[in-house]
Length: 114
Length: 113
Image (cartoon, rainbow over all chains, first blue to last red; front, side, top):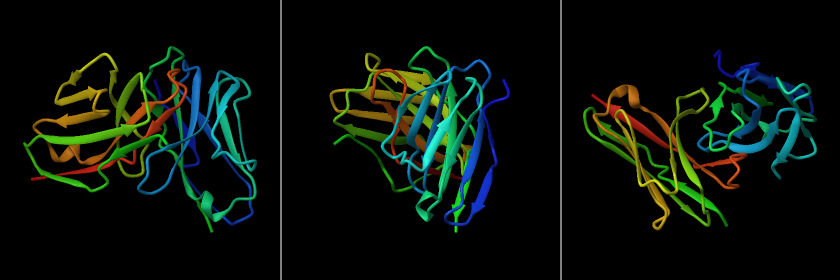
């Protein structure tokens, strides 16, 4: 069990640029989640995959955000035309497909939009 | 609207004492509640899960209670140590399907010698 891996750990970009983050979940976990966290707040749900199917998306996920999990393994989160308000920690988590399960989080990608 | 409240003020306690953190919620009927620990610059780490039909759950020095009438969970750390210093988050499942957890803002605990 190598844990959930996220890459990169830190990303600094200029406003208007596109960024992409990668998440590698724990290998036997079917479910994968993306959360966003700003300073002093708890993580906010963005989206959730069951295998390769994206089953739920938050209203926080504007049209500039897109997430994929093409083969049911790793996932990518892309933000197009970044804005300063996108600056946050983007957290990925995974869990087993049996309900009521704890989430295993990665260390996150810290995005700073200048 | 649905709301989860945790004390946003930091909790400072002395080593060896019991720390008690509170999580209150409104307009939820959660099937279960979870507690996580988060250290600066790291993702949350799962600690305990308690279901709606359970009053209390223990794990080593940790104890969680869940009162669905008061809509409140209490999280206790006994014999606290400086290594327990972190932010503690409570989280509720708002869908009943475990597909989405909603987190509180967290309470920062500082344990001093």
